[in-house]
Length: 72
Image (cartoon, rainbow, N blue to C red):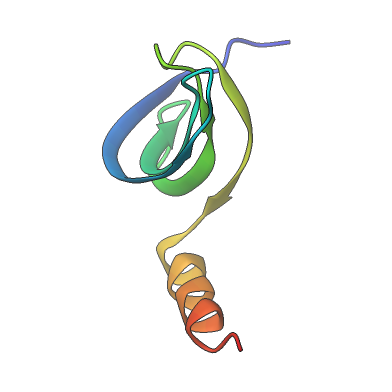
């Protein structure tokens, strides 16, 4: 598997933290030198390891915000 390169451009916020120190974060990340996207996933305290996550464009993030605001 090829090396995955990432650059955390901006941390938007931490959603939760596990007892082991892993945090679920929303960040703006550039993956492999590409245009930055919004990314929600778990991160180890040192940011060297990560869990599976979801990556969204700005338009998708705005749509998700609208969906969440309309939840009952």
